[in-house]
Structure formats: C-alpha cells, structure tokens
Image (cartoon, rainbow, N blue to C red; front, side, top):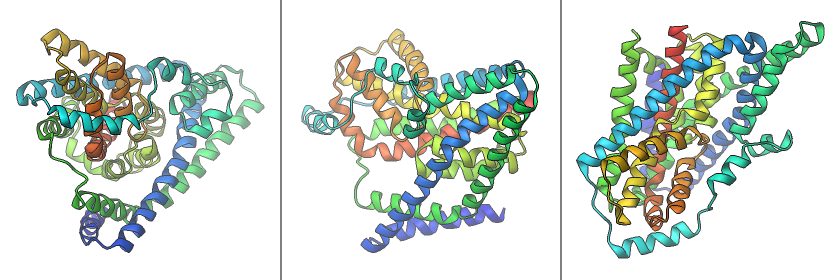
Length: 394
C-alpha cells in the first residue's frame, strides 16, 4: 500500500511539473526518462534470453510443453477478444471519413516513416549469426536461439559439464534480478519524469482532436479490455482481478511510460514473482513469450486503424471484411515485436500492401504516443493475467 501511494504521488507530481512549462525542467525530465529507458532496455535482452534458456534446460521441453500450450491458448483467447471489442466499437461509434486536404497533409509524415515488407520482417527473424540479434535487440530472433539452446541443454545427458553450464546460467539470472531490484527501488523517480514529459507534450498541443471518434474507438476498446475483459478471464478461473492488478501495478505503470513491453519485461518478471507470488519457473517462461506474442492492444489498434484507413479509401466494410481483418490483426499482433511504435509500422506495412491510403497514418502519428502508452500498459497487464492463469491452472 505504501508503494502504491508513492507511485501515484510520483505520477501526480510529474504531471504538475510538466504543466509548469519550464524549459530547463522539461530537459531534465527528458534526460531522466532516456536514462531509465536505456537501463531497462539494457536489462531486457539478457532477461529474455536467460529466462527461456534456463527454463527449458531446467524443466525440459516435455514439461515446458504444457506451460507453452496454456500460454498460447490464453494469449489467443485474450487477443481475439481485444480485436472483437475493437470491431464492435468501430461499428457502434462509426468514425467518419477525413477531409481530402487533411489526408494530403498526412502523406508528408508517412513519407518519412520506414517501410518494411512482411516478407522482409519474417526473413529478418532468422538469425545468421549469434551477435547480430543481441546488438539489434531482436526479441523474436533471440527467442528462437534461446529455445534451441534451452532444448539442446535439456536433451544432453546428465554430466558435470551440463550441470556447470546450467548453474552458470542460473547464477547470471540471479545477478540480473538483483540489478533489476535496485532499479525498481528508484522507480518513483522514473515515473515522475515520464509523467512530466507526457504532461508537457499534451500541454504543448501534441495531442490532436481532428479524428476524435477514431481515437475514442481505440482508447475505449483498450479500457474495456483492461478493466472488463481481462478481469473476467481471471474471475472465471477463481482469481481476484483487483488483487492481481494491485500486485502488478509497478509493471503496468512502467509499460505505460516506456511504451515497450520488452523494455518493461525485467520489472514484469520481478513483480510477478516477488509481489504476485507466481512460481519462478512459470513467470520466467510465460512472461518472455507473452512479451513477444501476447499483444492485445496491438491487435485492437491494427484492426481499428486498418478499418478506418480502408473506409477512407472507399472499401465497403461488410461483415465478412471485418471478420477477415479480425483474424489478420490477431495473427499480425502475435508476430509483432514488443518495441515502441511496432504496431504503427506494422499497420502501415499492411495498409501499403493492399494499396490503402496510407497518408492517413501520418495524421494518426502525432497522437500515437498516447495510444502506444495505453496499449502497451494493456499488453503488460494481459501478460500478467496470462501468467497468473497458467500458474493457477498448473
């Protein structure tokens, strides 16, 4: 309870500091946010790799199969639910089309955005050396390597060499968690800085209101998924959603401001084990996987944005079309990496592939910061729910 008051206090203080409009203060807060983001990104990559390798090596691929099966089931169920909620809200709220001149201005922003084909994205997941994925922080490539190494270790016959390797991995993991706990101890300072930076951006007019209904659909969908759908999943399995959310609040708040579920992973894992009481073998296996494939907020964003862009391009949004794009959004979200703006560029790539008016993505770009924050917090909350459900079931 004391920690919760401290975090909320830091959040409110940061919001007030950001509204003051002091240039030197904004620069200081920006410096602190950059430091925190870099430190969490530094810890995120080894956390993912060590967690997956040590879990497979220690518990074996057979035991991990049940955990992975439950994780995948809950991931797909929650992601489909998020996309379905987004589709329903889009039909009910019915955002209108944008003026032609506004779409023209949006094209200038999109022209500066990097374009990546889905084929290139998939080929890029296959590592051709060990160092490159580590340097680039390519989460999916690292997971492929970690799976291979972990399963390989589990299949090796018991020997002193195998024991030394596994003990070394577990020792490195313990050291990493010690560093994470130190960083979490200073988390209120980071929350204050992130809140101040966001508050300054909002007060300076970064958030636009020209496409209010579209934003309303996206944010309302995230709120319903966060406070209604995911708690229902927990309640059906006999878990108290208020307790689970209260315990996982440090991770959810960190995700809100870092806008990266991968960068938040060290906090998510530490919080799940120490505060929520999830068994380490479950948390260290489920959460790294969820960080990569469990993208509730991303699925909703891809669906709603795709429908909005296609509608502006003159595509009739029939029931079969919406149903098809629900499936596409879920599959795309599962294949997306948990990095800042990953959903935005993935949606841009999908819209480019079907010849939709991608200039609209340029109009969405200025307000995507807020959307990205909310959907990342939802993704981490969903990861936490899946971990809690798997731990409860097994």
